[in-house]
Length: 113
Length: 111
Image 1 (tube, rainbow over the protein chains, first blue to last red):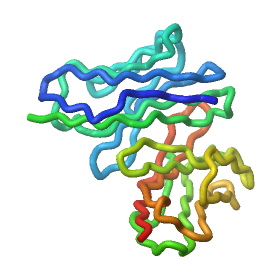
Image 2 (image 1 turned 180 degrees about the vertical axis):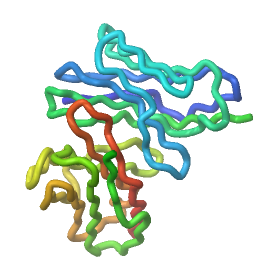
Image 3 (image 1 turned 45 degrees about the vertical axis):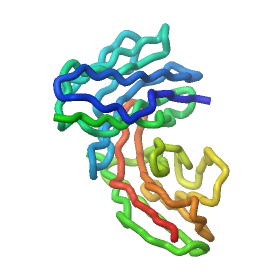
């Protein structure tokens, strides 16, 4: 079945540091890929997405590129802020599995001033 | 836009008591619906998903069940709660080629 693997946290960074959260996937079909973010005390919200190979999703300074050859969708931000402290979830939607959403385990990121 | 109403936000229940969590969808029809659980310190685990009325797929064996009596209603239930059922339960929905939308979640504590 489909699965998403992302690096375990917590990840602790200083403000303005570079952030990378690795995400790899397995899927039977050709999935769409997503990053969701959960800020403290809030619900999940979509951060960015990519629907085909080599697509780059971007939002709020975050980027992730759909790499079919390495089945990866790593999330990056060049200079994090304290307000980026949150839990980040990588996810896929597989058309061969009825577009069922599969999430990774989540990575908690803490940015210190 | 699509929204999910999920209630209650917090719930404390004794071991052995029944459970019923409900979520309802507004703003779209015929969505896929999901129940996820996020146990303390862990990620989102898919419990059930439904592609239509009366159609439920269970992802993991457990003490819980789900039902979808109407297109926009998805219910998570248990006849007898266990301590290990404590966690954060999240209802979610999506449609083909659209992003997912989420309820606010229910934090369940079984005591």
